[in-house]
Length: 257
Image 1 (cartoon, one colour):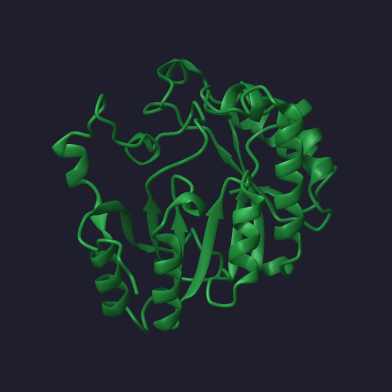
Image 2 (spheres, helix red, strand yellow):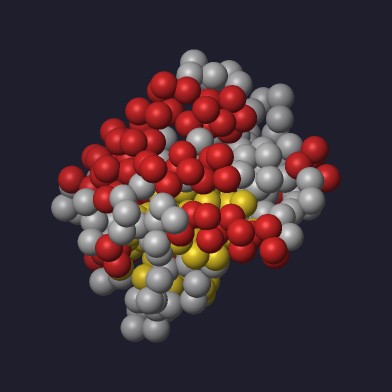
């Protein structure tokens, strides 16, 4: 029996998207909470949890949707939408994720899960559970394990600066995702200049399966959690093309989205 409140602010609902779930018109729900602190992240209201010292403002709360609003939308759009994307933040640490997946499957939606790849045990739990198994998994692969440890990990985490730990968990998650059919999985990398150069692309490329769909995206400064990243100039189109072409030498299906 569900005991989680359905009418409290829980995430951001995108009612319709044609780009977030390959091959499907879908809705997306971005849940709160994340175990990483990527400096270029723009979802501040989702990533940073409310504390007594740092209360979310009423304005921030008003931007968030409830789980009941999500469920009502899914019921209303049955037969029009065919998929639901569950993203974040990091949905594998959010208690609402199992509830959302079960509801979506009851309504005959296909479920895509977005994850940062640092929680292989949690990911395995979902994949191995028939009721919770996502139909599609997109795993972010943000940089090399060393930069996960030094630049992406929350500094209060016991895994801060532990490159070996991130090598292990990323490899485990890649293996789990690799067991999905080719058209039901992808890996994604945002081309943030301090985090992704040819050096990191080579490291990542050697970690991924050769048949991976590796999707790159341009870095967009402006609302980054680490305000210093708002001053970073994105790669030029020429530089991006060079990086993606380099990635293709490791993963032929690498491409810019």
